[in-house]
Image (cartoon, one colour):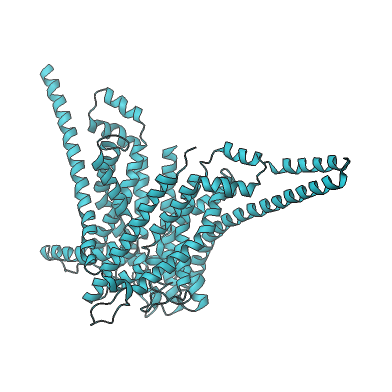
Length: 331
Length: 285
């Protein structure tokens, strides 16, 4: 670091200057220099502290969020205890709080969405990562598709929900009438469909990046042995990218679990354990969005915060595992 | 034997080609509904947009016309305030991270940034409610801004750190060797050189949170009137879309479609701006 060097020179200048003939003039000049240097050093010190404080704020922020959720959910935990997680009844009026309907709704919608979206997002990822990779000629179309996917990934969740409410819900209702189930229109299936649409762009762009990371030498070696394009994808690209793709699926799952608005708008919002995928339900996020401002009693509010804590822990753990795998994969 | 192997080769090539076709088919099939969403919003929204849409307040049910001026102003204020709150912390902590690439504290901070990236938006809403709305006793635009700024931080920090750490050592050493103090080296050499990444990170993070609704539900809450007071409830575009979308009135749906189109255009503009900044201003070392 250069600062100690600077102080060193300034000391030396001071001592040598004092012995010269024009002592007073050069003395005052060097004193001014020394004071300027120490001034700069003080500013440096302040600056470094400012950087450190900003970093510490981020650190404290996360700890504070975690603590807030824990403290907030204590009253509910006192009232219901561990039974909270498998209680089937959620009735704020009589203050019975069981989170099972929401846990079931969350898991059902997320996994169903993941299942629906997987073939689609994987094909876009292969299409953009393998058939039309970036940085080569004649892929104007691929460029357009890539831009479109990025653009669509940026559409806010509330707009997806709005669209789902006006286009997807009537569509599902017609299907339900055809299949002879109660035609709610809204429900687990509709929520899963809209979630699937929402995670496809995200999952696809993740998958494309992962597939791009497969070393070209491996693929070229396979081509030189006479493998066809599909054989290279099947036996080289996909096996190599397997862990990365798994991580991509985890990250998409994390997204789906925490998604709020679009799901809230099309899931039907009933706090009853869903019987099948056509019945309306609620997810952790959607019940919080719906009932948080209406929660009158302390335990009710606390129960909702506890749902938030569960959601936070689950999504964070899944997200962190996914990121860790991708980090290992890319190095 | 020879004929057989040719047959075998043909089959393999056929499989390869058919898989290629399948992938293409699935890609197009996926893009269709996604593009349809875009077209649907544009089609529905364009009819709602006229001059009074931007200048008037929503009218009560039964009256036609009206606009979304309160939500537009509210969104601008809430997002602007959130950006102002997030920029100093975001940029300074990114600087800290890039200045201490290996430190233990930096590792912990990086972990926290990762946690913030994955945090569901509704949880941020709960936390902002607990920190600000409950003690202050009322919903406020300020609490909404705090919630949004928490969501902006990770995007901003990661994008800025990515650019800042590419700054070459020799330039830094050259500056320090001239006797330029450390803080001036950072603020006047490193930051200007990394401006494209830092700025595009800021704009990208704005683009990400402009449409966030969940954190605002129990913080900014919404307000049918025009409000400039940051400690009172305030409306915003995504809140308006949500409230009007689930309402049963056609005229409100119409306003919501218009608002959705405005929101989309806003996000698109921010994205284009990000790209232009990256293209025009990025420094190659």
